[in-house]
Length: 125
Image 1 (cartoon, helix red, strand yellow):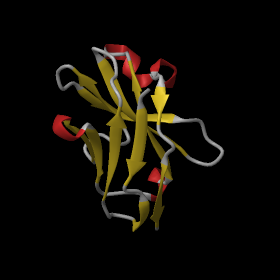
Image 2 (tube, rainbow, N blue to C red):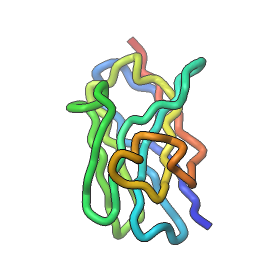
Image 3 (cartoon, rainbow, N blue to C red):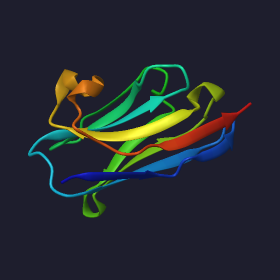
Image 4 (cartoon, helix red, strand yellow):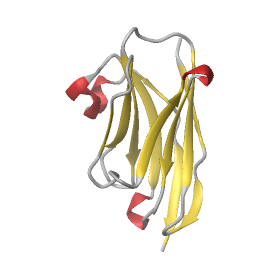
């Protein structure tokens, strides 16, 4: 059984930074993606970023590109989302997820099997 636990959310002023962590326990797929998604009140869940295994392919939603960075520490079974230059529109609950998907499948939440409980990110103006 795979479990994902997110942390690192909080309240930050616009222009500030946060680093989210996603710690995985349990064995997963031979090739997979770890994705970050977010959901704001009244909106659909949105892809933010993903990183694949094996290899180190990454991609981002256009609104996060250049501001966010996804990385992995394999020794700690942890994936990070470094968020800089935060904007009020980044406010949402952020979820990490793992699924047996690579390439173009990483953008679709339906391709992810395991999900964390989420961590709230609030950016004040």
